[in-house]
Amino acid sequence: AVNNLLVSKYLWLTTTVGFVFLSGKIAGRNMSTCFAREQPYVEVIGAGTTSVNGIYRQRDPAVIPNGFTATCKHMGWDDQKMWLQLAGGDRPWFESSNGAYIYRNLGDSMWWIDEPSGAGVYIAVSMPDKSTIPSSGWKLLQGANQPAPTVKSNA
Image 1 (cartoon, one colour):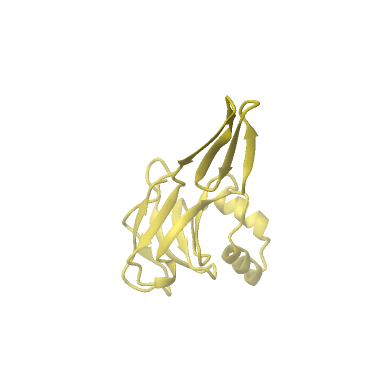
Image 2 (cartoon, helix red, strand yellow):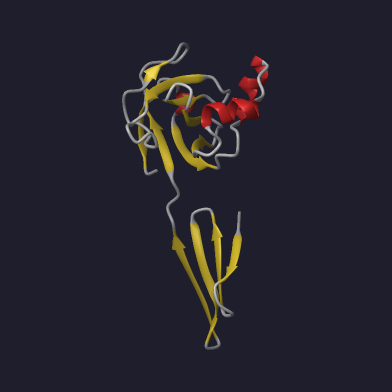
């Protein structure tokens, strides 16, 4: 998404995912500057269930993962209601380019790594601050492959 903001009558601030552009005219001269801004991400490494390995980008808490919706439909549950109950609807979650996702489950206070299909494969106990994704200590759920992953985060 691109957002434009008039900073002054001469300068415009444009934001896109990961970048801030400052452009306009000052004293008759065209000015343009770009500042990189690192977005929150998580990296899952070394998981035996290879579909969950990769880079995950932070997502809007109001958006429900496709795999979560698919699982809810399969179980006959309302995905909106279940997402609010389990993820809160106000906490960031993370998604990889293939649709695998990571979120903190409020029902059991565990972090979950789910495959693109929505099947849960790994869980870990929340850190004391509850917002930090654990780097280790991931346990396999039924159907997951050894080894458990390592998770790196800048979030």
